[in-house]
Image (cartoon, rainbow, N blue to C red; front, side):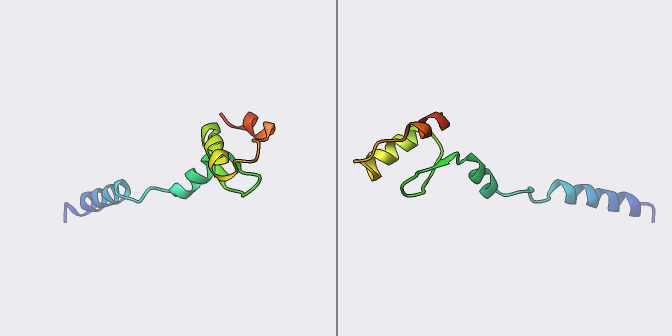
Amino acid sequence: MVRGKAKADSQARNAKKHEAPKGSQLDAIKNSQKSVCPICKTPIAAKKVLEDHYASKHPKEQIPADYLGLLK
């Protein structure tokens, strides 16, 4: 059978092309979370999110200065 090896090679290339992506979006999400709220341990990714979080969840508390330095 002349086409046998070419067919097998083609199937192997096609299978490799259609593989599921490696890794998970959960890993990317986990890596993007830079800090946590010291009061309620909610993950915080940006300075603006931290300010909004404190305004809505902890209105009587002040944002710690060391947390503002960690976030952009």
